[in-house]
Image (tube, rainbow over all chains, first blue to last red; front, side, top):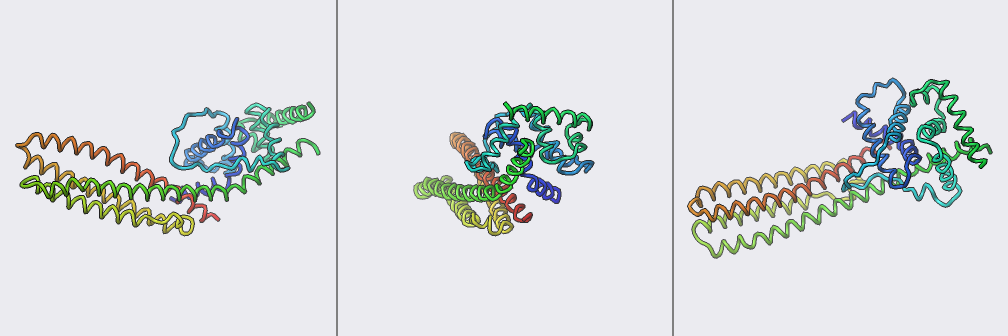
Length: 159
Length: 189
């Protein structure tokens, strides 16, 4: 029970991070909840084996990004319960902030799955060591790739 | 502003907007619990009314039959009345949906009590059915048509009962899970 409480608290504390990742990977709004549920399942399954070798937030990022990269949409049976969905209309509202978020979504969605993961980790202000740990790369490789991705993003905004 | 810096700002905006969403989710969850509790309550009352209608043939049999059939009718009528009384009591102890957000611990305890009484009611019904089967086999052995009719009726009743019980218990499980989430949120605040 203690472990369950601990897990519920971790999920609650990192909910916005998980949803941000889902939002950036989802092709349409209805896919966000599917991603979220899949990530929660993987987090729950992995939590028992989590030994604390990395920080909890790095681990959550790793599981979430791996889930989104390897995600295949399944036809899930509708449950009686209403999923804890976010109100996307409020996120992509017509005000200045909403437009900015939509702009970010458009930019990031022009990248491929791996590039997307690296940009999200970089936006989260993670160190190159942590990005390397999440992505399973070496630090020099992270640095080189990030430079290329940043160039690509600059190029996109110039076009 | 550099577009990379702009992206960082946009990312922070997204995170802030998502952080505000918890309130909406709590409201959504509270609405789900209310809707599920109301559905369960309505379903329980409908089941009680249906059980009362089912009692009518038992009472009819009680009045117009004699011998073995009269004994069966007395047994069935008493059994049905007890079942209905227990069922109505069970419906009345169903907690109010509003308790889930006000006092989730008490709500969980009440839901637990509701579930226990409901399961006790199922066992009581199964015992009645078992007694009926054994009795019919012993007393009505000579009347094979009675055994066959009773067996068919019993199987149909058992299937309907299992489906209804499954629905109620699934609903109770969903309510308890949602209430547990609300409780965790409240504790974490």
